[in-house]
Image 1 (cartoon, rainbow, N blue to C red):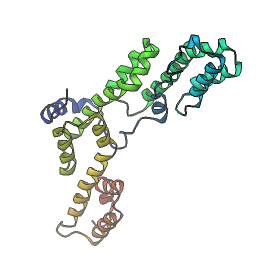
Image 2 (cartoon, one colour):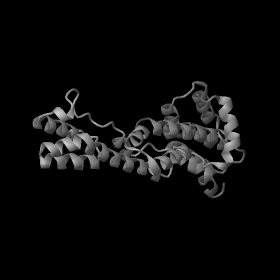
Image 3 (cartoon, one colour):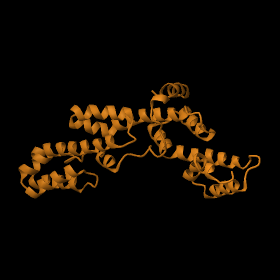
Image 4 (tube, rainbow, N blue to C red):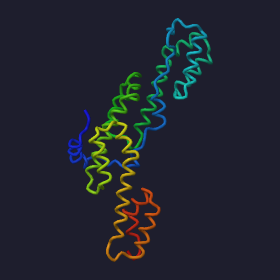
Length: 253
């Protein structure tokens, strides 16, 4: 069920005190290991059953798997071992069972790498803990292909709700979040907001807040100069630092 603005605002009010606040720095994309292992296993052949393949066909099928740039270390190792042996028995064993087990090994590594990330949310962690305890090779693969996306979407909805509940949230960030909610944002759109949209919208709000300092009565020359310098520099990080720290360090402010 898609989130609505009202439900997420209510959720934000209830959940925000108990949750880690999502920040642009923490909302990082999945690791390269996870993306690589999330690639579906390569089919041995589109037509001929493995048991009926000739030695040449078996070798060609294993070679196709090994040639895939997205395979993990486990699959690469076992495919190379089967080709090195070269016997029909070794090649057939890899295609019938070894590939599946090696893929599960790679998938388990990829899932563990997701779990080790500092920004991994509660829903993803819970799903991973269940998998690592008793997940089959097929369940590990299903998590990387679909389950991870959905569990992370749940965490991303909570993260966006938490941002919306902040008292200091600016109109630019608020506008982006409301637009995301009103348009029934997809998992990819929620992720894009946390990875890039939030940072840019926050920078717009910060730029306005820094410029507003110039309207203060009796502003010192030193502070005016510092404000103009940060506006000229104009990176999201420099704007945020100035508002949180820099302006209070200016002599004669």
